[in-house]
Length: 436
Image (cartoon, rainbow, N blue to C red; front, top):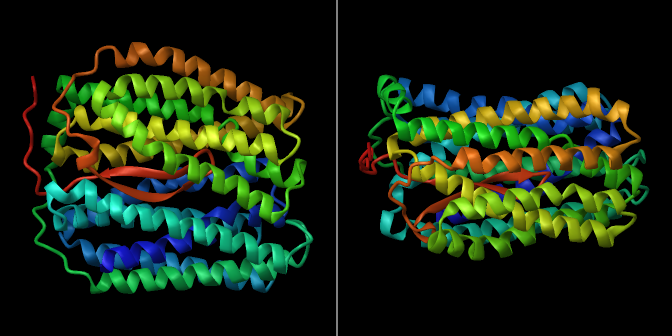
């Protein structure tokens, strides 16, 4: 019960704050390079959060203090950005720094929380219980997103560049900090079972040298390379909507909501296909669909085409994440996975940053604008998708747990496809065989 309430409070923070970070940057006059950094640099540095949590858990194997302390840092960051924006002292570099710290400690919370609640919830009930909890998380994230759009529309009807947007953004950050404070208090009140501890580093290195481990690393590198081409365009969809298409806050909110709703609707059908036919085909098919996503934006002139593109984005990214993460589970053992997912976060984050920098410094200055850059991103995505069958051809087929029995943790919103999720597994789970 505490966890469901905590998830609702966290989701309201995400809907009110994360959804509007890019809008705040545009209000502050961010350049295209800075807009890319607002989206990509926090993801790159955010990958250090899980590594920090792992180091802290090695030093002192208590997960609740790690999670609650990181929540306190997130609250402090949101309040500091709120105060600086309210006084007119928040500039784009300070905003980027604040979002980076916010993202890093947020991912650190997620690592500790996933291990903690993976131990609390019995394995036979895990998928059903976390599915139940995630329904509330989805609902309250949408409520936060809608509430934020409504507040902005009423308090700042002049649009993102209007001076009256600053007090409205200040209110959003204050509300987000309040809800995160509530979620932290609920985490502090929750019980924590005994922690077995993490796999020793030497065993992790030994596992990486096995056939199954090397295949998992190849899969991580494929995902990172794909995100590199995705971020040639992903950070610039929101600026395109707010600046080129001159969307109101309600239109921007509607477009963002469509990706979330599509991802929610598609997750169950994709999960059934993965369980029945395997993850490889789902991953390959979704990669080719994701390669098409930037093309509707090339011809977009209003909300209709953008809504269609966002529905396509949410549905296809749902298939990509489920297929990709299922293959990672098949090619790893339970006690290795905290390290594997920390590596995945770090690899994806730095390749996303590299992609955004390439787009801002090399692609955008040499093409006609955002629309041409979307075409280039689509071409890059297709090249990686065409190489994916070669990478996936030799994957070890490990023991497979039905997705319905796996808990999935929602850990934030991404500009390219709504919610991001990650499998949630207990630290006490017995290791399955190597299959070597």
